[in-house]
Image (cartoon, rainbow over all chains, first blue to last red; front, side):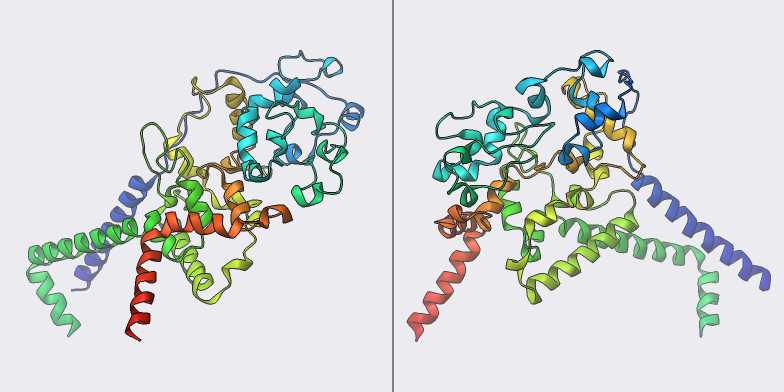
Amino acid sequence: MKGCKVKRIFLLLGVFFLSIMSLWAVNHTITPETTVTEVDPVIEVSSELRKQYPIKPHHAKLSMDCIHCHEGQGTNPEEFEYIGDEGCLKCHGSKEKIAHRTGYMDRFHTNPHNSFHDGPTLSCDECHQVHQESINMCAECHDKEVPNWMKVTAP
Amino acid sequence: MIKKFIEIIRKRLLVALLVGAIIGLITVYASYTAISMTGTPQFCVVCHEMAPMRASYDKDVHGGMGESGIKVNCVECHLPHDNLVNYVYTKAKNGLSEVNTHFFGNPDLIDWKKKREYRASFVYDNGCIKCHTNYETNQKISAKARQMHRHYNKLKGSDKQLGCASCHAEVGHKGLNNMLNIYKPQHMLYEKGSAIKKAEIDMRLYGEVIEISNKVEEKTKTER
């Protein structure tokens, strides 16, 4: 009788584990493809250079490094150049897309990315300075109104 | 009593197994149906405070605006898919806290902008990756995108780990920033007329509900 009980417990345990295992197997996450064919170049950037060209908080938060913007400009950081609108838009899409992001401002023609004066054509660095303090070009004339229109230019 | 029961089971093992299997099947099917039925946007929106999120979702490729028209349910991105226990636990936890805010809290006090800063914590990467399996090797996305996805993979598991939503800020909700600024303008200028715009969107989202409640109101007025 005692042996029977033990057997039964084992049987129950077995069924339990099998069901848990099958649940786990069904639910096991798909692992993404990770065969890396492209390799990023490794560059050495001196701490003086880093201090001279600091990375703004919204990019630093994503642990971005010099090479992420200055790609294809060789391995010597001293020779890195201005990446232009084209460089920014590689990640940020297009000027139209950015204009849409702040599209709620269009109702009063105050959308800085689809400006009343210039449309979605301004250069990014008219306002957004990557290695120094950003400016708000709208405020150069509309300095009284701008605080009611938009926040401080993203760094 | 229990001994007798066990005796019966022992004698009719086959019948007991069959009954057990049927009960098991019914339970599994019922809980599966319950989980999937409570996973649609139509269900979520009943309690979740998410009008701007719903309105912007409707404009996104994930909300059926893509070429294929496929719609992705809220739960695919906003619940963890690493294991079933975690999935059900998070679902129940979120559900309870939302019911609490909906019935006892003040939804107007929710600071959406602040919450969006923590977006990577409520957009689950394993949900994204379930569909976007080859984000690192896909040749149809730009070389820049692949580079940044390698960056993401490199940081995975470290204390600097990123979420998909860290960079893809409006993913699944096209024009979310616009919607939020209609519902709760950040700057003074846009407060003008925002109530009308908001009502327009609400009407589109919950049109039937609003119409019905209006009719009921009219009816009670005429009855008086």
